[in-house]
Length: 82
Image (cartoon, rainbow, N blue to C red; front, side):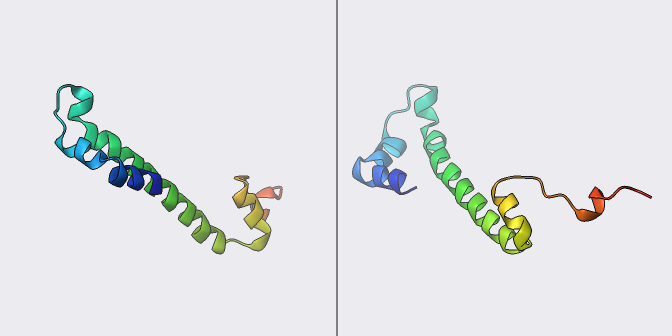
């Protein structure tokens, strides 16, 4: 996000996005194309924050498995039915 914001400010990317001529499909849709960078960054930040919040509510014995994307088996489901 910081690199994208830097490019917007320092290299006049804002002027290109909003004011350059729109001659073909890519130039006609450049606002949406360039904002994908920001949306991906927000998605990654939200995912990381969600993992932190979720990990805070998990038992300490399961926390490492959650971080490593491993399955957490419930003790009740591991037992054989009677």
